Amino acid sequence: MSENSTKKMKPWVYWLLFAITFIVVFIIGMLTASIMERRTETVARVDLVRNLPEYEPRNEVWGENFPRQYESYLKTLDTSFRSPYMGSAHIDYLEEYPELVVMWAGYAFSREYNQGRGHAYAVTDVRNILRTGGIEWSPQPATCWTCKSTDVPRLMKKVGVAEFYSKKFTDFGSEVVNPIGCQDCHDPKTMNLRITRPALTEALSRRGFDIKNATHQEMRSLVCAQCHVEYYFQKPTNYLTFPWDKGFSAEEMEAYYDEMNYYDWIHPLSKAKMLKAQHPDYELYMTGIHAQRGVACADCHMPYKVEGGSKFTDHHVRSPLANIANSCQVCHRESEKQLMEDVVSRQNKVMELRRLAEKSIAAAHIEAQKAWEAGATEQEMEPILKLIRSAQWRWDWVAAANGVGFHAPVEALRILGTSIQRAEQARGMLQVVFVRHNVPIPVKLPDVSTKELAQKYIGLDMDKARKDKENFLRTVVPEWDRIAKERQGTLMKYEYKR
Image (cartoon, helix red, strand yellow):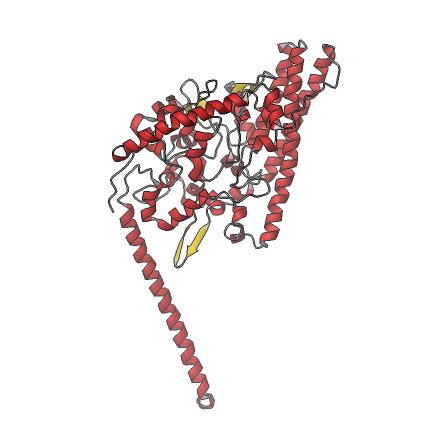
């Protein structure tokens, strides 16, 4: 600046420069103070974490060190949210889709199948569902507890993994009392994410992947993959195993099961050797665009949250549709309304094909039953039953996963298309069988348009089932709770030192 121009500067310019300088210095000072304060809090927090025992199962104890995360976790008790198809609210899926009763005839799911509630209800819901406990014809193994409680890693350490799986469901009823929570996913010493369920580590190892080499972002999905997966119980020990040796797709897992001639149950109507998919959320996700782009489960279902000056992971694990601003809009710039419409539009398409598959598969089971009654031979029925098995597996691979196919909508639609194709092929072959055995076609199908009608058709005595369950909850469960309370000073409760 020349001497003449300096002389021409007005006094207010100097005051403006002074104000700007003051504001910049003030902002830098505030940022420095904030950074130092957060660093101090982090150091203090780590000091507290080191006092947690290796297998502390109680979420409330962890919550003393991490109150914000624990408070958000408690919101999984909220069952008020319902999206067009799912959510945390109670939904009786057998009531909504009665064909499922026929498809699961002879399997415990035909008795009761509801929308899962939040993680905090895990132990309560598995105790109360009609599929577990007190059912003579369907005794459940202890393996069914594996994904329900923070007590499981402690019990596996105590009795051994294989020994844990080999026990009965009722053997650990008084031991498994704390629902899914902190201990399932976090190392109590460092708070790093860790795997506590050996089935996942074993499955990845068979695929040549060492869990120790997983990145932090990969771990933000793998901790979910401990439970949100397809699995089966190896016989006769009920050892929990993931069928990933050939890959994650529906076809690859189906080939895995076919190669070992595995089946979960024999359908009493069609006599097909059936597979029951559990909840292959991780596998479906792995075939979708979000996995390809490196988006983790936690990015959508446990997005970051800011309270005051603290940023932390929201442990209110829930549908992203209940929290679009913090989940979807971190990456997508469209409005909440538009994003909701995009999701529901894809889910509508998946559900349209899903319902076609359900009606076709249920009809195939009933028609197969009538073919047997008409004198069909095993040679005639063998290829038909294989098609029914394949059709239902592929339908279930999509239907049993959460999100109505949204984790990979293109793949979900493709698999449902092959499910419908196989079911209709089986029905076409059944028409030939009917002609051979002089059965008038089309075969008249029974009315299974409601849950009650469908359960009656497959021969379920639901009054007895409910009475058996009521007796179980009235006599067995209170005894479990009594024993658990007596054990509070020894096995179940750890001395907590701050």
